[in-house]
Every structure is written in C-alpha cells, then in structure tokens.
Image (cartoon, rainbow, N blue to C red; front, side, top):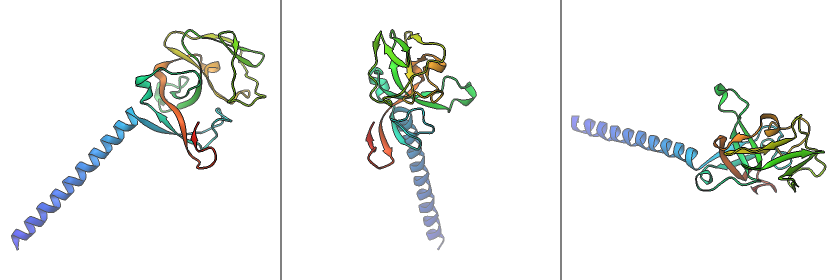
Length: 188
C-alpha cells in the first residue's frame, strides 16, 4: 500500500510541476507577443472621430516599428507626452501628419503640409482645424507631428497642444478594428 501512495504522490507532483511549467511558458509567450508583436487598444474619448469612436477595439502592431519607417497617415499608439513620468500607462492614439523635415501649417482651419493643402478624406468635410496660438511647426529630425481626426475645438490633445514628439514614443501602428463586429469591423 505504501508503494501505491508514493507512486500517486510522485504522479501528482509531476502533474503539478508540468502545469506550473506550462503556465510560466504561456505567460512568457504572452509577454513576448505583447512586447514584440501586437497589443490591443480600447478607444476612450472622441479625439479620432469619425475614424474611431469610443469603445472601438483595435489591434496595435509593434512588429512594423522594427522593419519600416512610419508613414504619413498611419494611426499610431503613443505614450502620452504631456503626462508626468509617474503616469506612463497613459496612451494616445493619433494620425501621423508630418515626418522629420516637414513643415506643417494651419491656415484658416485647413492643414498644409510643405505648403500644399493636405487632402484629409478621413475627417468630417466641414471640420475646422484650430491652431491654439501656434500655426506653424517644422518637424525636427527623429520626430513626428500628430493630429486627432476630430478637429472640433478642444476635442483632441495632439501636436497642436504638446508639439512634435520623438518617434520612440510610438508604441504601435493600428490598422485593424476587431470590435464592434459590424460594418466597421476590419481594416481602418
């Protein structure tokens, strides 16, 4: 009888050990995927209306940041540059308007990129882009200029508010909405 108990205890001990190893491996894989592949984003607020609305859920890809440059028009997840270091979990989602060397201007409510009016099909056609006192930015090397798609007065904290930001503030590029599952599901 004593042999049966010890065999049962050994089997139980091996089973527990296997479960613990599996859980640890799963956690490590999840951390690696979140760090190097993708993350999910939950939209709070209306700064990206009409493109994104509150409660949309997106996939933010990290992988492209390692293999290609950011493009104008990309919708990016960034660390909030206007928040203190103690609140590094605060994130913003904005559209890339200007890249290093670009000149971004706001004239009479319209956005100009390198002296040409920017064709912004993604914003409300009657939108007026406020400039909040500064109306011209030259994007420094290694930085980008961002705007929210909602251009109503005070609707978006973006580069008009906090200036250009270093590209290392970018945490992912969003291109896919997975919730809600309706006519807006899919590529952004």
